[in-house]
Length: 287
Image 1: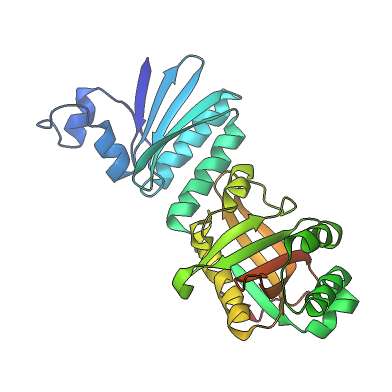
Image 2 (image 1 turned 90 degrees about the vertical axis):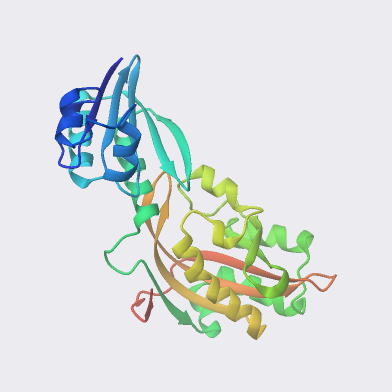
């Protein structure tokens, strides 16, 4: 098996060569030094094993120069199956990707998850007036009308057909965690526009602060907390650059209605429904 390593300056080395140890002043270190270099110094390990390539890196420490060298090399090779091996959340993980484009998107997404983005503000929102709904978001109007008629009581059998007809299944149903700290996702609608299918499936049953883009989760949680504390519906117009593990950072512009409800057993739930953006000026509240 052909095995190389790319250093933090983008230079290629034979992974087992004595010259690599000498250049790094590691002549006295016993055993395989690749793990140390990859996990701590930003190096990338590359191995050829039929029928594809194995790439080892650490998203938190990988060097930009090493990453650039790797991607240029992969692009020259064309379509080839690549196995990514990376350290994330303290665990070594492995994924097989079918194309160079998929490799690039996945590596960028992993790096953003670990380091975040220093570009433009990722999230912005403008509070809307409920009086706007009938004119700009009539589908919300039907749900708000039912909420008022039902006295804020959430009945699953009644709401399901309404969410399918007027929201296209673009909704999330939350429950407040015990002690009032955080929210659990009781159910995530199939119509949510999430490009990462595995992350979409993982939403139901997890805590809000455990979704893939934790910064987005923490930002959006305060809107749900405000609705829960006030007991009143709220409308917000949102622009968000959401980072999904398999798709990278994706822009979403939408309007969202939050309905604070109670079940017939007295348990507090929050229904968040999304729709096409009903406003253009979002430069009021950013994070």
